[in-house]
Length: 94
Image 1: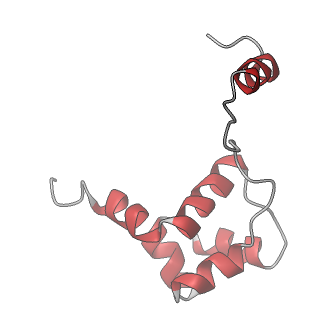
Image 2: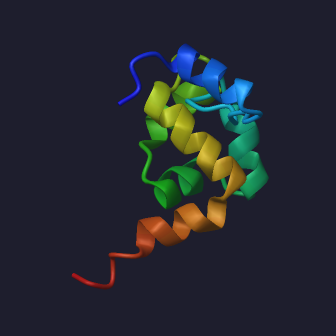
């Protein structure tokens, strides 16, 4: 069990091991992520299981994604096909 992440990072650095950044990004450009997929707001929301109104609010700056949503959006940005596959994997087993 890690009691202090900073101490662990320091100990690993002393051994020549550097950690990749971890945790949710501080901010994400929701519109840019959606536009990179080529989907409309409605299509993006439906494809990735998001509420269309929430997506609109994020894009228009009325609200911001929470930590989990930022992580999910970042994953979509980097690996949209993997997210699509993961979201549809169990749909044929019902």
